[in-house]
Amino acid sequence: MTAVDLALPVVGSLSPSRAGDFMTCPLLFRFRTIDRLPQSPSPAATRGTVVHSVLERLFELPAVERTPDAARALLRPEWERLVEAEPEVATLFADDSELSTWLISAEELLTGYFTLEDPRRVLVAEREQCVEVVLPGGLRLRGIVDRLDEAPSGDLRLVDYKTGRSPGEAFEGKALFQMKFYALVLWRTRGTIPKLLQLMYLGDREVLRYSPDEADLLAVERKLLALWEAIERATQLQDFRPRRSKLCDWCDHQALCPEFGGTPPPFPAALPGADEPLPEQRTAPA
Image 1 (cartoon, rainbow, N blue to C red):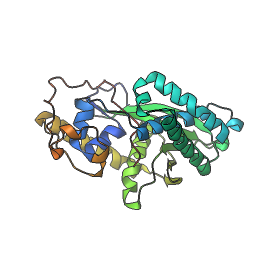
Image 2 (cartoon, rainbow, N blue to C red):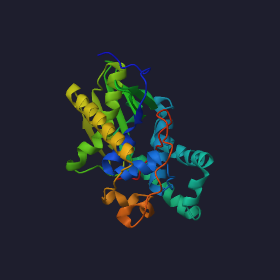
Image 3 (cartoon, helix red, strand yellow):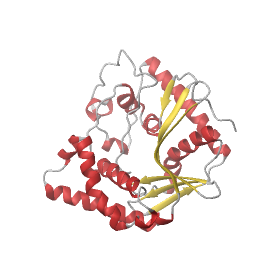
Image 4 (cartoon, helix red, strand yellow):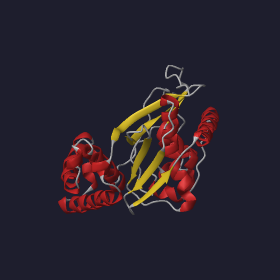
């Protein structure tokens, strides 16, 4: 398969998170992507960020040194690194006791990781890798892959860490959407379909695995193109309607949402450019 040309004119951008926002609630998409409203840090999302950072650093070590003790030793330095970069997260905890309890909860997630695989035996090709492609028509797909493994045979495995609990069987498709998104980008840029997609749920120590094929990825591409058409229509009409769900419990923007008696701000006169980076964050665990 021929890789898609990154030099194509860009008309818009989607990441798995922002595509998921629109499918979950169009108004949430507007708040995050068009209005660019700030989001308050939460202990759960911040824990996800720190645990991801620890696992990224773990694979910088020689294979023999990738041990539970090494991961635990990385935890506080990664927290301190985050505080230096984002000082507001330090306000999440009233005192050292609260912080210590939170760090213990993060340590438990790291312990869970080691029950799922032995990192000393993993052949990692890339970590926290930015991937992107521009599809014919100008839609840019981009995001950050937690981990890409490559076997001696050349087979690729996409790995994503989740700090929440695994989804029920009815929600597995939604959980795999992000991974199929990344698989599509890799296929379009490298001409190779990953052999395995692997979601590692550290919260309950479960692994969700899926082997995609060409039909899967073509279906995802069609879905994303249709999704972008819906986003363009909503933008032209300035009509992003709320969709109430259980996920509203984690939303920072209830005060502005009509579902909760609020009023959205005026629609921005100038929209973010297609080349502006999309706001991303580690979301609260499901």
